[in-house]
Image (cartoon, rainbow, N blue to C red):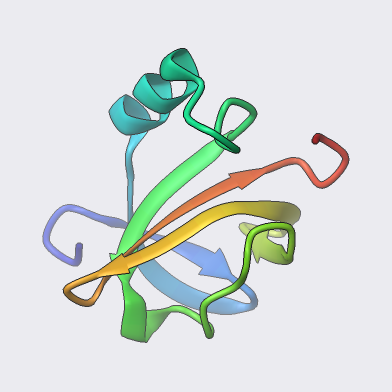
Length: 88
């Protein structure tokens, strides 16, 4: 992610992330379970992020609080989907 990512604040820490608008649009359009309401989808090195959060927990991203919809880690790369806390 460092080669093409941008810096964002994740739970108070600067983290290099890659925003994935294409995957977000794809997941929203396909209504993948739990991701139809996702507003933010990003990839980052798992070691740069706070400890993995379960769906339904909360994470601060760029100063705003979001609900974690999905957090998967594969080969050290985390993919995180976030939505507004009040959405189901």
